[in-house]
Structure formats: C-alpha cells, structure tokens
Length: 94
Image 1 (cartoon, rainbow, N blue to C red):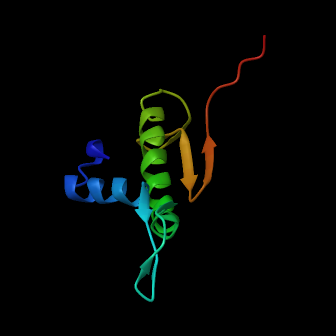
Image 2 (cartoon, rainbow, N blue to C red):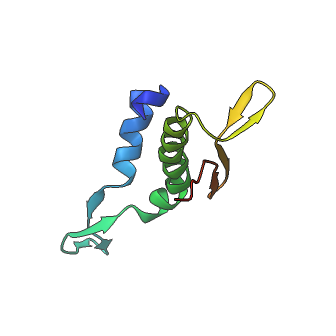
C-alpha cells in the first residue's frame, strides 16, 4: 500500500480492521467472560479495496514484459476488469 502512496493513517486503519478484538458483553451490570472476535463487518467492506490494491501491483509488474498486442503506440499485454483478467502473450509450439 505504501507503493501506491496510500497515507500511513489509512494503512494503520486497515490493519486494525482485520485484527481480532477482545470483547465482553455486559448484561444488567454483569460482565461476561472475555472472548475474541474478528472484525468481520469492516473486513467485508475492506476486502474489495485490498484485493484491487494487490491486483494492481500484479498488473503493473506484467506491463514491463515486452509482449502482447500493439494498438497504435500502446502495447497491451493485460486486460483487467473487476476480478476478470486476460494476459496476452506469445505461445510458441515446439
């Protein structure tokens, strides 16, 4: 995330969201024993953002490979939309 210049404060917030939290419940003044829980709700909303950030790194690293389709001055070797990816390259038969 640092590579994409995401602010440190946001990175730390993301780390907090995917950690376990020690919790207890108070009912009529009586505290239950402590238990561990995952912050699932925050994780569910954060997952697509983290997925796209990780995938962006993969896509950028494939662009340095000189292969694919030439369209004008642009060389395309990756087509990506949401969670669909097409890698374009050479296949040589022996």
